[in-house]
Length: 239
Image (cartoon, rainbow, N blue to C red):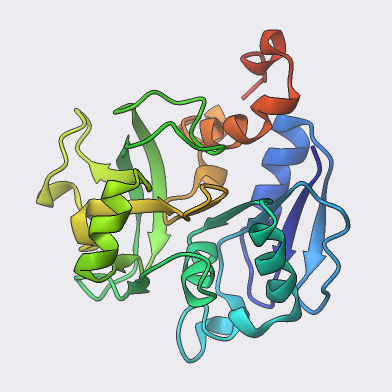
């Protein structure tokens, strides 16, 4: 399974994400430059965290016009897997690939810490290795992670089982105290209608190896490669 990682001016988690795919998943991977429309025949696109174009104007607002995003939209429309992490989630909403928007954190400050997420659905290529209600420990690092959408959009996300993760307490309780940024309904990650695009603010790339303090984020990537890895090997990756 070949992965492509988009690199924008200002991306700073591209090498973290590359390391997970190359060194832990042991899958083919290469960088995709923002100014090219060539996705080089990849099976999945990863849009990493960072500060694309310096977050000028608004997070993700300039990146959406990059030539590569036109190719990504077509790729996603054809059913290709797309994962946007942190700034990548912001770019996906700005590009119209996911509904809603990411606003300034409720406290108007940058937040970098470990949080807990509750798995809301296992019905996707990104969560099929998880169990419903499974609690993950994954770090966040953002200033604009406050997810918002209209009441109608929220109702549709809930009705179609498209909320992938919610911020929660360690015991899985979804509470206001467990919400680090003010996100509507504690939303930490959502899926598109086709369930082949996921945007999430927490960083699975920063929690896929024991030396980073948590391996829970690896389960997102494991889910993506599960279809091309034999059952006997799927649980045997060294993290």
